[in-house]
Length: 238
Image (cartoon, rainbow, N blue to C red; front, side, top):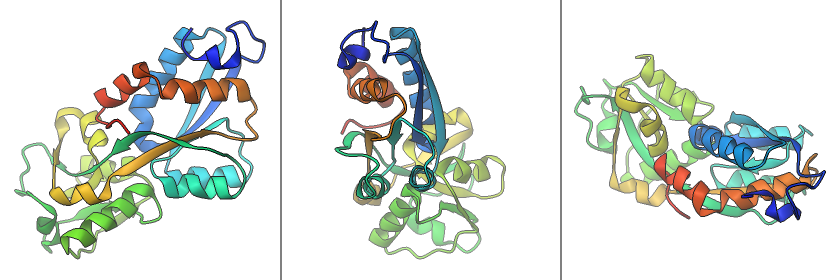
C-alpha cells in the first residue's frame, strides 16, 4: 500500500472514510489525479477536495471549516494557519513559477513584462493577498514595470478564465495553469519570474477529523509517484 503505511496498516479502522483536502486552485489538475491514485491504492478512503485561493482557504480554516489537510500555493498563507495553532511542521512539496498567459499565437506580440505596460492592453492579475498576486507584484517590481490591470481576481484560475473569455489580452498566472489549458493558451516565459518562484507547503491540520489518513496523504504527496504527477503538470521539485 502506498499512503497508509504511516497509519500502521491498511486495515486500520482509522485508515478509511472521507479525507477533506483544502488545496490552492493551481493544484486542481495535479491533485485531482493524485487523489484518484491515493484512493486506488487505499480502498476505503475517499478524498474530497476544496480548491480555492490559498488566502480564502486559510480564512476558512481559521473560521472552523472542517478539513484534514491544507496545501497552500505560498508559505505566507500556511504560516498564518500555523501561527493560529491549526497546523504544525508544514513541508514544501513543489514549486511553481509565473508566466504571461496569452491567446495561442500571441496576437499582441507579448515577449516580456514590459509589454504589459502598453495602455492598449487589458491585463488580469490575481489580487495581491493571494499567492499568484503577491508573486506577480514581486516580478513586476523586479522588472521595474508599472501597470494597472483591468481586474484583480481571487485566484489564478479566475484570472486565466478572463483570458479564455476574451475579456483580457494577457494574464499573469502560473506555468502549470497554462499547461492545463492546453492549446488555447500560450505561456510567455520571462526572466523576472526567477525572483517570484512560489514554494508550496502542505500540512495535516491539528483538528483533522481523519488524522491518520491526513498524515498518510501528506506522506504520499512527498513520494516519487506524486512528484511524477506534479512535474507532469508543470510543477518543479522542491
